[in-house]
Image (cartoon, rainbow, N blue to C red; front, top):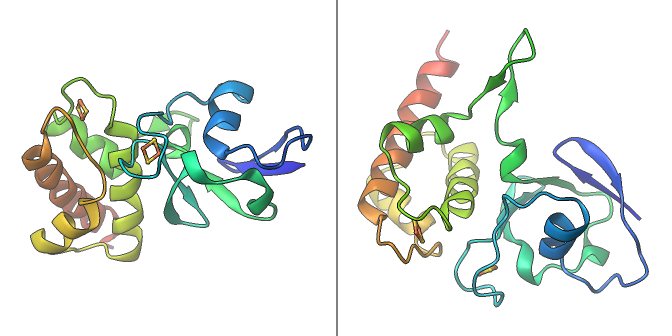
Length: 162
Ligand code: FES
Ligand code: FES
């Protein structure tokens, strides 16, 4: 079967359509930025976007993904006019605020944050807390995550201003 991931089509085996997206990304396609942690849909470390919505890849059978657009952390940056990588405002903000500690949860955090800002580019601090509440960070970087998401919102607003 074909999966559209980061705007590229990938042919993956449909021998076992019940296998979950996380292992197809990591083991078949080498997209190891999406992380495994609880494997039970609880922690958010495996968050990717499916048709723009933050979705947990550890519970998602690939049989449900035909015709969808999947985005992983590897597809968060865009390309500039000379082909250079342009970090997404969320990535820029996470760097600026120096959010990560061990870093394991970070791709999931950034994917949840990017999905939030796509549907609400100017969230309130409370809306950030609510949207990010399902993504756990065992290092306890929650204050910096909140600060970085609000910073990303500012960057995004600047980018879209005429
Ligand atoms: S690894 Fe998927 S939610 Fe924890
Ligand atoms: S930075 Fe270590 S789990 Fe979040």
